[in-house]
Image (tube, rainbow, N blue to C red; front, side):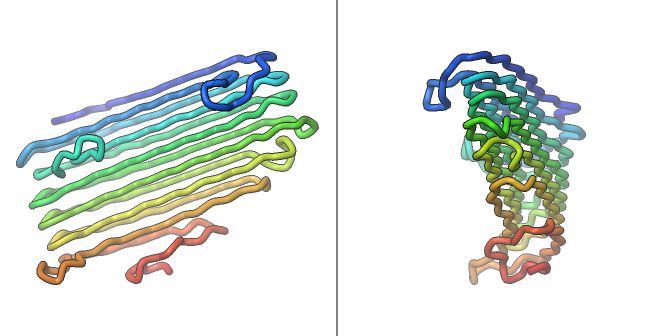
Length: 269
């Protein structure tokens, strides 16, 4: 299976004026919603090649007076196995260079309440004697421009997940980059919050080989913010099977953030 230059792009723009509706259930002034998914599965000794893959969602809301606006985007790429289908991991060769990006902007005036919400997930799974070479870039940009002299509540919320898994005698070489920029600060309304979680994980089970390089970058403005970044390595925990033949890792921790519950074999505690 060769998926060459696959592009899944969504561009959404809404213009709202004096709708006087609140973000509550289905009662919403203006909403941009995007759900983009790619799942590639392979049978025994199969091959999956994605020389260049891309998922993007660009969302813009212009909100005035008492309008409430929301941008919501979900990007999912599952190569080798999908949690959605429950199929077995790939047994063969997987080569992928994949990028996922979300760009969300709310321009709010008056008493508009605005929210940006993004979920970005990438997975690459392999078992038996499979070989996986995976490069993944995940980028989320969220901007709320809310007038500071109005009674507004604005929120940026982002969750980025990247998981690479190898079992049996599989060989995995994975490079992961996660980048997040959020703007919702003291100049953007009386209540403005940035909330985010970035998570990368690599697993090497049985006699598999895992080389995993991950970097995370988080930039928040000086508004109320809450964020976590985590790194997890899982090695073979079954005493009846061999330990992994190799587990090498490198992690670039962004400034002003903390690794949550770092594993004992994390080289950068």
